[in-house]
Image (tube, rainbow, N blue to C red):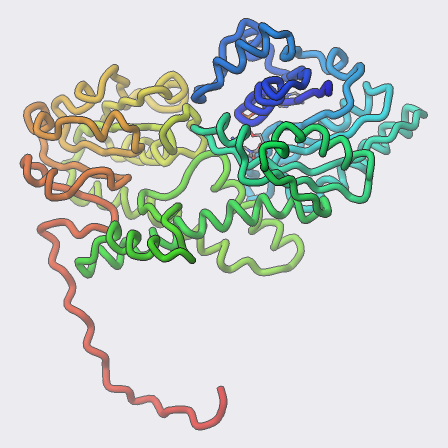
Length: 460
Ligand SMILES: NC(=O)c1ccc[n+]([C@@H]2O[C@H](COP(=O)([O-])OP(=O)(O)OC[C@H]3O[C@@H](n4cnc5c(N)ncnc54)[C@H](O)[C@@H]3O)[C@@H](O)[C@H]2O)c1
């Protein structure tokens, strides 16, 4: 099948390359000329394991091509995917300008029936608005084409995006009663369904909501564990053991129970906010989702406060890891950005290292941050080391080397990757998340106050 993918960012580029790998003929469209020029030469514009190989193979077999001109992409194309960004507005709503721009430009240029698929994460009801906007453009042109709008939310994770696309847990497709669109989507995903991956068809509104519900639920697990970290620190419990104990319960599962400095990235923060905004728009309270967001904000501030509590004024800190998680170069909403901004404002200087994202990070931060080429360079002469991303590279470091080059003795482990005893064993003070610091007095258990309240006698 010949398909077009509009927007060749983290989602669009991976989708385009994977669809080509699965045997479809794919043209990727992007308004960013520099990006398209690079992609045409087979150089990936993002860091994503396995992507380069697919990109090169797609170009070599001519099943994959790129353009900046949507008019080149539409002839003979049956399905158009839109994978443009939907960033958060100040009021938490999703910015849908790019989504609407894409559906209107398709409607302006198309000269045949086509299925328009929204792969972007969009609030429930957006597909309906897209359909109305497309119809308005066609009416203005005085033409009539069948252009059903389908929702196919994306669940890939940066860092394993190719694997997730080629072997998804499920493919969600929202089609509102258009049999032709449903048949085409079935045909498109046949290479995956043949290997047993389920395509689940549902109403478009449900598909749009599945994406937000899934991300908000995963973020809830993270915030739930993060909420417990403060209690662990005050009581002497260790969040790693608590989470392990919880996660071994089949009903709970171990994933997304890792305590840390809070979730970041281009999806969880914005999707949690957008779900809150959608609830507000429809006058439906979202108290759990609001709490997930609040806990996440508090977690970052708590970490920052802990740093201020022990670091000398105008100190120097080393930072390991800048991205919101390993195996990606995405810096969107990375906790490191907030932290570096706060530390800069407080007069600190920083030496930072990240295995893949330094070129992005350099454009986003102040002069107070010096970027270095190796982890050990980042700790030379610093008062504290702060670990913000759990890159494997940092797990393998010989901790005994740290005190030899550091000025101070503090290790802030924002991802709980080190063993507290091992860090202490090399002469550093360990500050984990949800792990009591050695010299911190553990709060005595509360003795319950005598119950002076009357036991209710009637049903409450
Ligand atoms: N990044 C992820 O891990 C991920 C995972 C699942 C879902 N999503 C969702 O997928 C969508 C895309 O996210 P992303 O991270 O790939 O965004 P991105 O910013 O990496 O990519 C968007 C691309 O669209 C291009 N673009 C913008 N307007 C355009 C237009 N009018 N015509 C053609 N190209 C245009 C941009 O130049 C950019 O290359 C978002 O809604 C996001 O929430 C992202």
